[in-house]
Image 1 (tube, one colour):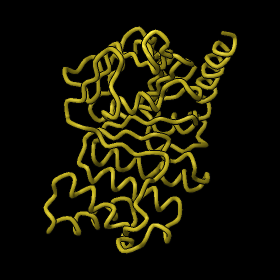
Image 2 (cartoon, one colour; image 1 turned 30 degrees about the vertical axis):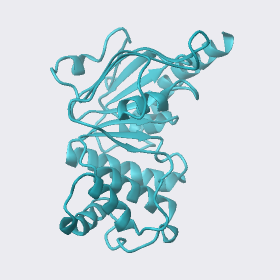
Image 3 (tube, helix red, strand yellow; image 1 turned 60 degrees about the horizontal axis):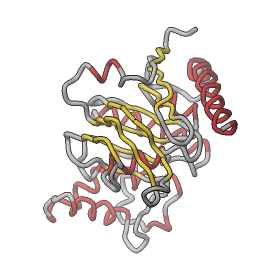
Length: 269
């Protein structure tokens, strides 16, 4: 047993989040089904989850458990079948697994487009785009086209574009899954740094248990479909962490066993 780990049963939201009056994100008894009435398939069932201001939460679960659906609901891209979702600070920013950059625009212009949609005056957009590229360590890349950028660089531009929206809540749907291990490791450092500097609230979806433990203050495991909050772990290991750290490895083993148990229960049913 490691002192760096606290587990929480799913009947209530996390103790830390429950102590605040206005969480950054609150999901209360959220259900989501797809299909016509009478033949609908439940994807999420009675999700209760708070994300505190400035908290980094990762969502884990087997494929098809509803992680991305949950993120889309929080982002406002879809509506729950039942239940309530509150994001008091306004619409969150969403970063996808694919960078989704416009290939006919430069890196800077991709970010400027997001700034324009956020209401930033035209005279300020270029300087702000350059500042955001500096923030993600891509200074000097403002005029580069998408095809001139590596996979990791494209994800950095996508991250800068998300930050350009000025949201206090950042939703990330497996943003580093398609990258090689070294590039992913570097971007782990970057998102951790930016999260701390900007005091963002982050809800991060991943299939990678070690990634979840490396990044998060809290790991939330969803059961297999329909997705329910099966278990939570509060991670008290100090940042910055490394993917190979013994503490990260030890906690990953325990969480992986729980994930395997959820997958086995799904197969049996």
